[in-house]
Amino acid sequence: DGGITQSPKYLFRKEGQNVTLSCEQNLNHDAMYWYRQDPGQGLRLIYYSQIVNDFQKGDIAEGYSVSREKKESFPLTVTSAQKNPTAFYLCASSYSIGPANYGYTFGSGTRLTVV
Amino acid sequence: AQTVTQSQPEMSVQEAETVTLSCTYDTSESDYYLFWYKQPPSRQMILVIRQEAYKQQNATENRFSVNFQKAAKSFSLKISDSQLGDAAMYFCAYRSADSGGSNYKLTFGKGTLLTVNP
Image (cartoon, rainbow over all chains, first blue to last red; front, side, top):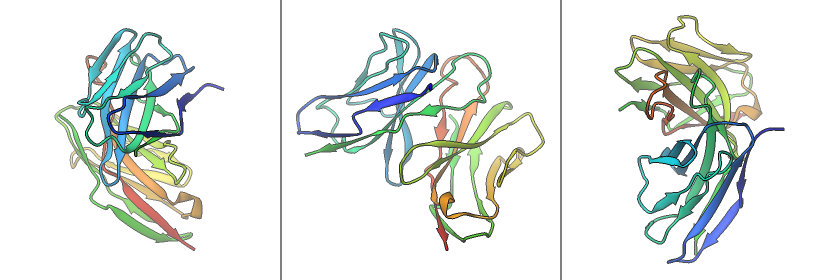
């Protein structure tokens, strides 16, 4: 079955460390997205990519980096520059051409905690 | 930039009754899509219902229906015959119909936490 896989489900990071969250999809979607979810804040866009080797900053990109070397993969690195990284991170994908009414397909998320 | 507002941080409903969740949005575009997503305690985001702005008919999916008022920029979700499994966080979201640039981004509201009482 097609879908999006995020790993790991839980991740613990020591202060000053970089960590990378994995996101893989087999839906043949062109576009991929990373959102951060905090209580009472809804979902806020970190980065998105509409084609391979290209990506754009979202609303809260500071302290994060991404790459898009393959259509199927869109890893997110949380760097030591991110001052408050403890949050729930959601990856999503969609078609980037054609009808936009399909919405997104989401992964199951990664809970990142700074220890 | 588009904004989505959900004015009810929390709502509760008795099992088998009906509840309506509110959503308003701000946009200068005439063509767009609106969505309701459900996030249960598992935190998996599930698409509940979608509405194309050019369609006047309100979307319906089984017990879920919307009241789309384009002029008022309002998009409320009605859940009929509420079930315990409907308990979740519900997010309203907006997406431009323009396929250019960054317009495939979804903009989310802050969510409404729905509790279903037995």
